[in-house]
Length: 422
Image 1 (tube, rainbow, N blue to C red):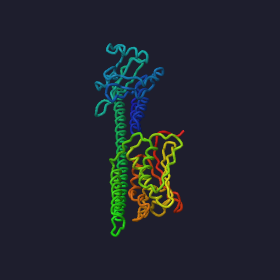
Image 2 (cartoon, rainbow, N blue to C red):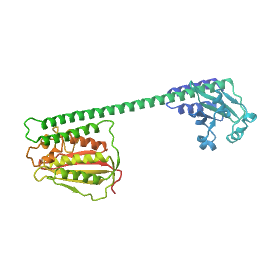
Image 3 (cartoon, rainbow, N blue to C red):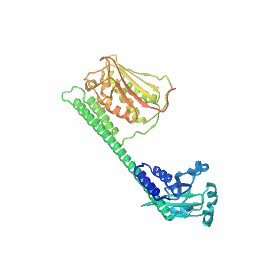
Image 4 (spheres, rainbow, N blue to C red):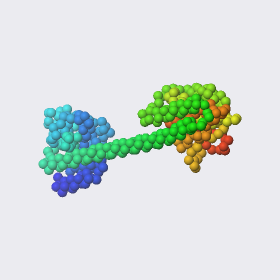
């Protein structure tokens, strides 16, 4: 073997080690360069399994073509054969003539099929221990020189270093990715908590304003009526705090959405019989929803209550219905009457409910108001509470605020369902 060729091979392998991103690149490059220099017929790099019991091929040079399709299934147990012994004993293993070694008679059939007689195997070692082996196979009985042994040891060291470098780089990438993911999750949680806190602060302002309005001096309304309105406000405020806590979770069960809507309609028909509430029966069979029955019922009661308060005018009425779409159920609640919500200037059609609030004027009633019962059961917190509950069910609350002052208003609750319309 020419010293110049050996030095060139070492230089090329070192260069490949510096530039390669994956250990397989260096492994293949090294086998392709060194195998011909040694005069070997073919060669193989094997990687140690995580449990340290088996070696499996990860790179090869000129492996016999007839057996190449099955090379991926090859496994060598640590301690068996030259490669297994090299890993187990962490030393260079030379077999000059396999057929003359009685301890390797179990390998004779394999050697005849693949066409080799001699083997030179070296372990791939890092600080933590062996991680694989490189083996060179010779067609004839071959005794290698000290220079060849030194070259194989050098190649084995480079292959081990390349594999270790790649593993450490992969571990670093995984750690960085996990850190980035954790940071993104923390940032997302922080944004959610900040948004929830802003919403809670806004709701507290609504509660305080409503309490001041209900307890103002000189109010001629019955004290019992105002106390009942304060109780309604307090219940909604307490529920809003509960629902917006990070640990709050719904308890899903199979719920009939039509039955839930009819129960909510029945409640408001008994509370405010002066406001007609009509139900548009669905034209198709509705699937059950995976929902929290209690909180879904409460959500529908809140939305219907807002509509009833809006329709609490001469000639006002409410219409409610459910329609099935592809992958969703939509509960539609519409009313003709007064506008119930206001928001920041410039708000557009179908505004998100979080930038709207219930108009204070829509909830006021006087001592002899014929529609007082339709308003006293509705609070300023009902809109943010309904929106929070819909969100907890994976849905969305949409509000249409367009049109003339006497136009039909609409709220749409959209919930995902597994059944699609056909």
